[in-house]
Picture 1 (cartoon, rainbow, N blue to C red):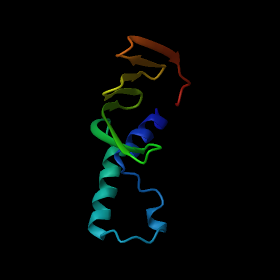
Picture 2: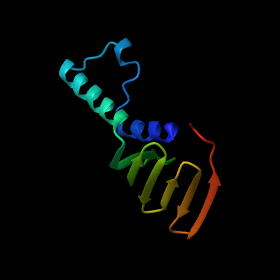
Picture 3: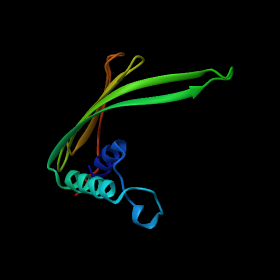
Picture 4: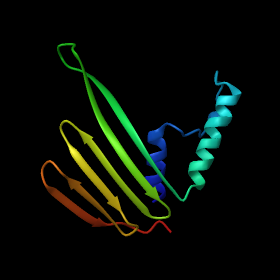
Length: 120
């Protein structure tokens, strides 16, 4: 679960690991706010997030194509995760209950479940 939670926080762009060692132009107040948000999420027993993710691809003809997807994620510590990721091409769901991971492809009506090692 720690890996999945780290993944979720990384998606938010809130990771500040190594920031103290870098020279940046980040305002001190903004840095405090981001660090406080990260600390709050690290201690929160439950949180959820919604994200809209954009990706660009330049094809061989030089045309720039944009793709987008949405993600809804709910995390309940110590070992619960539910995520839904949707785009015009796919719609996938993920459930983790501390013992197994289940993946559902809603467009193809396929699912799979597998046991997961304990993180405790």
